[in-house]
Image (cartoon, rainbow, N blue to C red; front, side):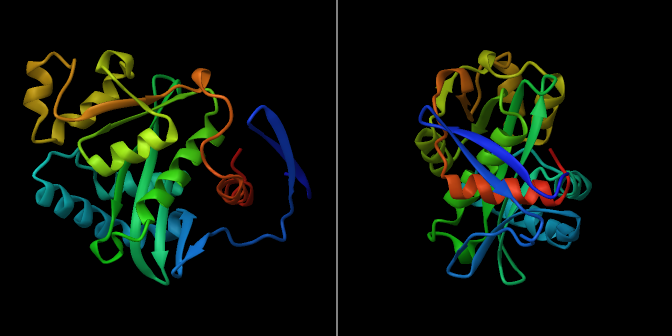
Length: 231
């Protein structure tokens, strides 16, 4: 990267230009001392807590969830495909992204907020960051979500996602294998993968003008990627 890089972002039909300088060393947004950051390798210390929190939340809701391993989540952090919320050194929330179908589709998944931080808007902030991370790294990809949670559906709708049948989502077998660990997988198979307990929601970049998240979030995510040398 050069000493000064300029990036553009389309917003409401306009192109906004801004500069990044390497003297910016920390990327975060703060509210009630909670920082939202693009996760990195050093954050692997939180992985087991993240997985335990996700599992407990699924049990509480009585719904299924695609189980992930420690290695899977740690890899997402190392690849700059995850967002982490921290209160000092305490885990507050998490989500990650993944690409499918030769990067034509992106999912934002595993959104979880620790019970101690629920009801404080943390989930919405994490969702905005994961969505923005996906938009920056794969701007032409369709972004989709499979969820059984009302709160996630509400956030998706606010961003412009629309409910769709599963045949409008990726046909990448690797994605659907991720559902094998869900307790509702038998329903998915019985319905020949047309629908399940989860709702499919899709954000198609060809059907939107401008970005639904703030320029501040965009800048924060971009800075983090530039500092790590990720384009």
